[in-house]
Image (cartoon, rainbow, N blue to C red; front, side):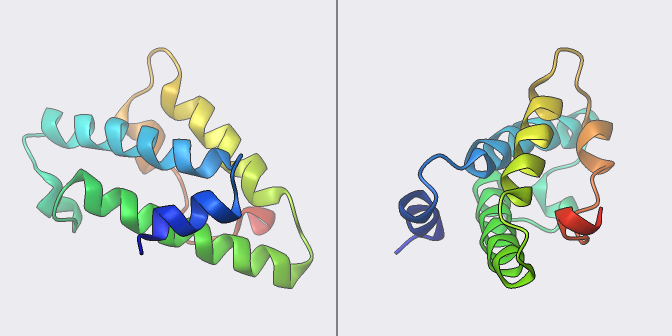
Length: 106
């Protein structure tokens, strides 16, 4: 079963799913502008990135629940989605994101 399907069932209204798709589009465009492909970023393709982003989402929801910080991952994904879809968004808007720090510590 796909991680996406699990997330979709668990978090029906999650803005993180849309954020991952928007991030893949923005980052993929940036890679193309730089004359690179997904392998330069450590992914087989855009779908591989989306799967990795879904894993990040699942991990963040799990850590969020353990930390008692419910709602912060969704808020972060909502903000990142808006930034990734904004008029004039560039690859720098994607690469400037700190994916390693949990949203409530950012």
